[in-house]
Image 1: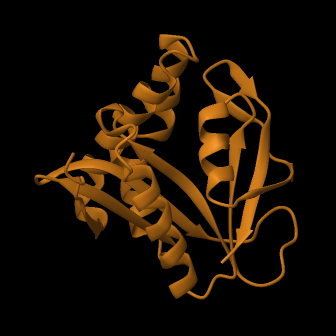
Image 2 (image 1 turned 120 degrees about the vertical axis):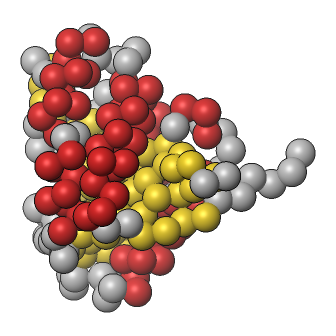
Image 3 (image 1 turned 45 degrees about the horizontal axis):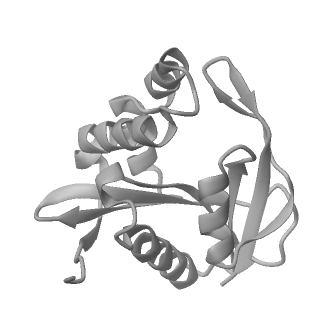
Length: 174
């Protein structure tokens, strides 16, 4: 089997509509079997609008990269420079999102995006990468544990429509 290849490219505010679409599409694919359709759509409407994407892409503290295969975006990550709610020594960056299209599950794209996010955080001067993951999201937890992120403690409550989810903060030195 041939190795899949992607081109990773940082995007800016001009790609806000594309980011909003990819955010929503990947979120729907990842959570359709976990949350009700109404809750998934409510979450996407609040969090994944073109305006929200434009604000994120205009924020100098955030970096967003798309993975492209054959010119089409197939995955993304968003990093944000800010302190972890659980004290870490030195600068840190939060991995806000790392999503891939369902058609890319099992291809290695998640690993490629994760490795690039770690490198981007390191190059920007961060000493730690951290994130909050829903306690019910076992697939994501296993992925992050495989990439050497370790649980630090309880994270924020995550709202997906009317679902309220506990979360755990994971982090790793970089």
